[in-house]
Image (cartoon, rainbow, N blue to C red; front, side, top):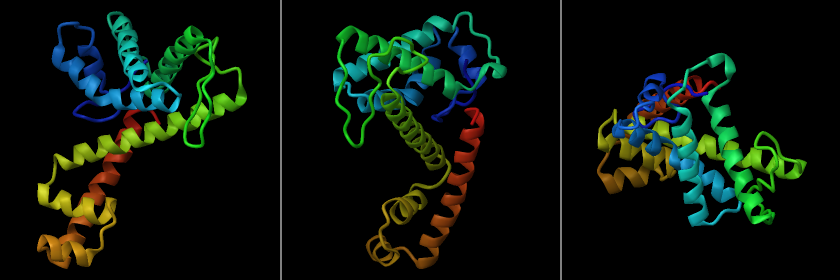
Length: 211
């Protein structure tokens, strides 16, 4: 079923999964929730669910995880955590659309899970394609957000601010230097150092999630 990580990252460490076997390990469950709820919520919204329905789907997915944890044994030969969570979310979406007996309209930026009969597959090829595209976008965004949170915790607030402005928000170097009283060297150093850490963190998270 699941793979490694923790400390705010996308994939979960095997140690965290072991902790989840204990229903009373509130810190372990909080960490798992904080790591994955945005991903589940985002996929649900892209699939046509309302805000309240997406929040319900997050809770339902966590219930499935909780139900499987007591007898959980990690077996990497059976697949990555990413693949397992993908299947669980599609299963929850399948139940949702079966209950409603409707298919949502597809918009240009969204995806549709459809009225699934099998949580492992979608009958409509177009719906399946939309789901997979949306799932991958949400996974990549959540992975990047997780990497950014980890890197932010490892550098000074000023260095992260300079990196964020120049690399993420694409503010000009001249503007940053003027508004934040920073030198060119400070801006370029922040972009290089934090960017290098971010690249390494993204690579590590991919490896941990079985990609």
